[in-house]
Length: 343
Image (tube, rainbow, N blue to C red; front, side):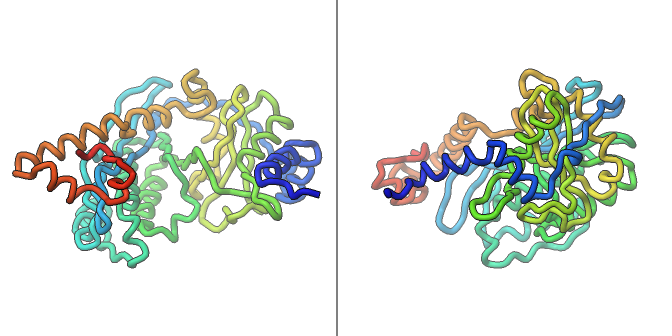
């Protein structure tokens, strides 16, 4: 018998998972049962909703350093209406192993009262990602500063492993102040690495959504992952993780992380978001996060414009085309006849 191709094996795996037998395997393997799908009841919400996001684009890359454009900020809604968009950072970041400490330290010390970072060699490759993450936390901090008791802040991303993160001190400050001011914070992830089942890993969020369609059609719901068999284990932090469908008319579910001071009234908190997830632009997803993504993201057109500005600045400093090619292009681009928009 001929061996199945990788494509055929993958197609069979998906077919098995969405069958009745696949649902049974999901229940048995994860420990999730029908009673775990709890209906979300809409709640009246008179407060402000703030949503945080960030963006990162490579302007040019050397083997030893990168020039990235970082942008971060937040949007504010009230009564389902957009109020304002605030950019808290919108500038270039030179990711250099020799220069990062001063750039990070400026924000860590002045805003969060933290010490300068001392990165391991293995972490230096992620300097731009860390700096974007820091700027997103700063945007969260600014939103928290303008928020009042009863407001809700949505962060585009997760919190599960925050206590082991490089920038955990910043989140510690943010969570402490949010708890004291009675302001809710939720981390909402558009994608997730949560998996279930032995053998081939199966995406947990997507299959929980399929099961939810079967169990609670046309209803918003949530599932708490406490004591569920999911990899990696989402229970190892001071908070709770949920799978949430914000709208019964949507087939999309999302991973939601709630710090401990929000998890104890999660029904009320999630209920506030039901009416914010009804826009035709992004049905089933909180519109504040959708708007934050659309307004804060760095587009390819913007990135190309910044590259041209950089070239103009270098030209004014006396660089010619040959010098720019030698400085800014990698030889991989030369042999593939690519310029990456540099020159």
